[in-house]
Image 1 (tube, rainbow, N blue to C red):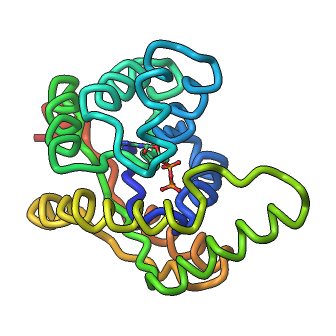
Image 2: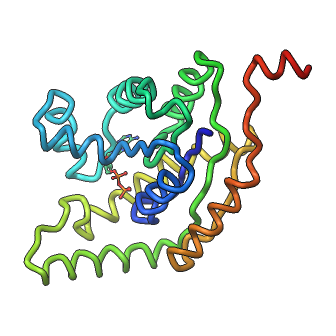
Length: 207
Ligand code: ADP
């Protein structure tokens, strides 16, 4: 099963994607995590991405599309994957459809985590204050001002993806304002209702 977990920054996608990975046996693909790993390792991709990520901007489409195209060929993706933080632009969504179609695959469901913006800003401000109080460094892009920039980027670049998947009839909404376990329960219910796509072979056999 191929799942896109969709929502604004700090909606809790990372936590829920990890749970989907653990419960449903699909790989967890977070472009944010992959970019942070590349930055920490100082790879060519990491060098190109560093300043952009830290300022709350998006990394160019060709970089993240390349990362995902390579990642989905790994063995652990054979039984499916959950995409967390990708696609983030309409171009990325189209590139994803094309790369999957090339393997006779498609996104099965887009789970949208609906959250309230003011609450998100509060969440990030609290998280930054708690981290500072512990004497730990705040993730550069979780600085409250940079976070507002990321929200603006989400609205301008990422939210316009929704009509793309709406047209494909793939969107399911969950209430991201509920406590974490309740959000998980809603997501599990959505996944339980998704019919697995038939492979071309079973389609051919069963007509
Ligand atoms: P969050 O889940 O808090 O929104 P992520 O960890 O997904 O944050 O992403 C952190 C940053 O990495 C983004 O603000 C952006 O700079 C970069 N990034 C991650 N995924 C993408 C993507 N698909 N396209 C472009 N930039 C991306």
